Image 1: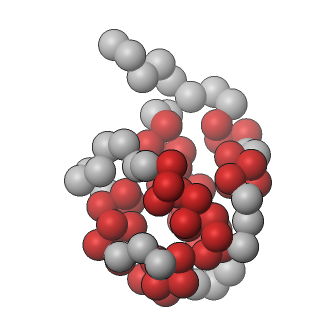
Image 2: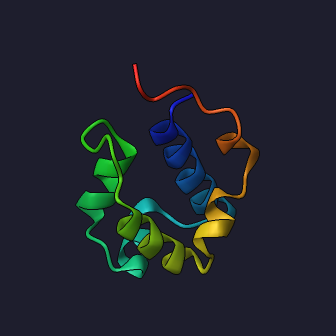
Length: 80
């Protein structure tokens, strides 16, 4: 799994845990829904840390909590 896929998975996990939609969390986070949808699909291959921090704020978690998951332990090599 690549980092981008792990981030997508993690965002969707938090949405599911909180029973909230992607659109709702984008609005709560203060980022345009189009930006979040770009992160969740093929448009954005490199989500910015500021956008991730804003999402974490919307979820009410820290960046540490976002990345504190085994999904990030065995990521594939990004440089090829």
